[in-house]
Structures are given as structure tokens and as C-alpha cells.
Image 1 (cartoon, rainbow, N blue to C red):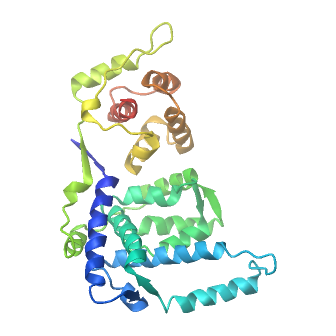
Image 2: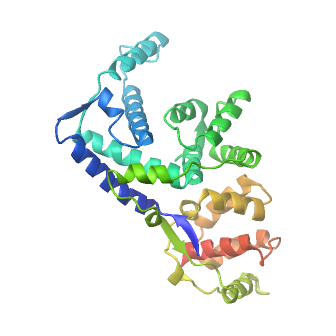
Image 3: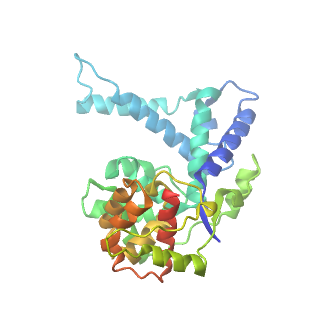
Length: 320
């Protein structure tokens, strides 16, 4: 059996956790102040992410400041706004309604950092627009204390090379290189299980989806199905829908470990090529179309390798 992190399970737990935490917080008060905000959860990383969430909300509000009469982009105005932020940060007052979504997000992000740090890294450096901005990245790291080292090394490299902005794919490749260079060991999960369980019982086994590995029979069928008929049309391949949940996009279902593995084993370490191929596969209508698109790559792949077998299983899951 193989396992993959379940974002849905993490979200469900985070909803319960945040609600119970809020029940305790607001049982004797209407609002939370600055000092209380830094200690609302037994998990300090949750508190830091809540503060980070508030900071991002402030940045979004400032972006909306536009006027035909005043220049909000002037350095003096920007400096004054920063001073205002410093003052406001000492005078926070937030009620349950507005704190709850921040708690949910902070809890779910913390759980991802703890139980699947590589997937968290992928979400941070690729983002929704597949662009990594060094200034925004630096701000993000201010609120991260757990499993921070690889991302900190990435930021140092961007600083040393004076790179202000790169594509998420390039950043991903840089992180891959960093992870090869350092012997990074993720933080022990046991203290976090204990801390979270003070509020809501946490069973980390619930956060993983178990996926059946390919049997020798299925591997043989996959190898046969991957071959192309003389006329140029790939043969139909058997479905394993009973073993998988259908996913809408390959990019959404791949873990960062799989991305590293497939890039190295199947795409000669070329992450740009891997990423472009995944996008092309997601645009295909059927499994046969996807296999036909892969023909040029598959000629060089070893159908006996574990990486090949896992890639085909993931591909089949996408179109099952």
C-alpha cells in the first residue's frame, strides 16, 4: 500500500479544531486582543500563521487605496502606512466571526507543514500563478518556524543570486537541488499530535489516502497497453477505477515527492519539460489521447521501473 496526503481530511479536522478552539476563546470575551492572539492555540505555529494571515489581509486592504487626488505610491506615504501597520498590530481587536476563518486556514496549513512538508513547499513556491516573488517569499517565511530549513536555503540562494522573481517551476528545480545537497529531516510529529489533541483529538492516520500498488498482473497489462499499434493508435488499457478516486487534474493530485521522482526518472531531471507534459496531459480528453501524447517520451522509459508503473497508475486515475 502507498499513501498520499488528503487535503480534504486535513480541512475537515481543521474545521472542527478551529470551532472548538473558538468556543473556548470566546466563552469569556467578545474580542481577542494582540497579546491573546499570540497564545490562542497550544500550537505556536498555528498562532504565527494566524498573525501572518492578518498581515496579508492588511496588505490587500492597502492595495485598494487609490485616489485621483493623493499619491499612495509615494515612498513617504508607503512609509507612513508601514508605521500605521506597526501601530495597528499593537491594537488588534477581532471577534469570533472574523477569527474563525483565520484559525481554520492556520490549522490546515500547519498540519500540511508537519505531516507533508514537501507538499507545503510545493504550494508555497509555485502558488496559484506559478511565480515566486522573493519579497513576498521572505514575508511568508517570517511566520514559518517548522520544517523551515529548505525554504530558508532557497531564499538565501535567491538573495545571493539577486533574483527578485522566477517561475515556480524554476524555484521548484532549485529546491530539488537543495534537498539533494542537505540531509533534511522533518520535525518529529509526536509533539504536534499531542498539542493539537489538547483541543481536538488528532489521529494522523486519517490524513492519508491508501492507494493499492500495482500487482505483477496489472504491471504486465500496463506494459502491453502502453505499446502502440502499427496503425499508430494506442491499445485500450484496463481500468483500475476500483482502486482510485477520480481526479480532475494530474497537477492537483501529484505530491511533491512524485514530482521529484518522475522528473528525475522519466524526464531526465528536466522539471520544465515534466511540468509542460503534465499540463498537456491534463488537456487531453481520454486516456488513449494522453498515451498517444506520451509516445515520444515512453520510447525511452523502462516499463519495468517503479517510476513508470506509478506514473501510469496516476495517469489512469486521472481518466478513470
